Image (cartoon, rainbow, N blue to C red; front, side):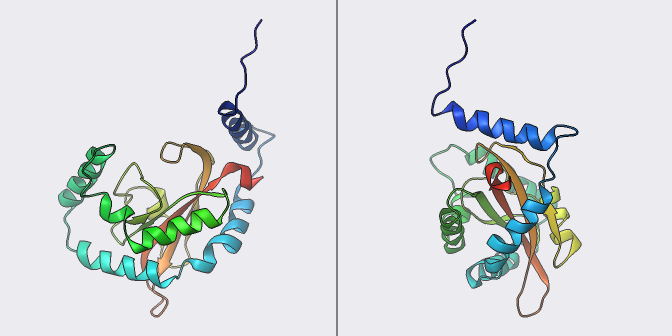
Length: 199
């Protein structure tokens, strides 16, 4: 029987799949939450109160506070229709702003440990993203409902799984973002962490 040939492209996927199996296999499962919590404390929390992020969220909150549910749904549909399109009037303001540049710098500085970062406003709409996300509105997902929905200091650890946006196996760490002066919740942030860095 001929064995499939592993190439430089397939090896990372095989390794990642093996890691996920280790996390998921009954009896052999490794709880990723302690590693994710440690990563959050050392690599993420130190910059969550950055002025550029807080300013971007507060400005976005002022713009979206009065949106209706149907308007939010329309924006989300517009975002999804623009994925892969040449003209992206809904997407461009989210990935081409100072906060998005700051997030890409954090991804680069992490040396492969972070796969993506995106920040949401008080309605669950994307404010800034290091790269494209599949949705514009995250308001119905645990990354938002379990953080902003629970108030300051709330944290949500997602399962290690394959992420279509970043094309990697990752665990998502989501946190509530607060105004440093008032201590009030103003939005949320999700950080995708490469599964290899959670071992």
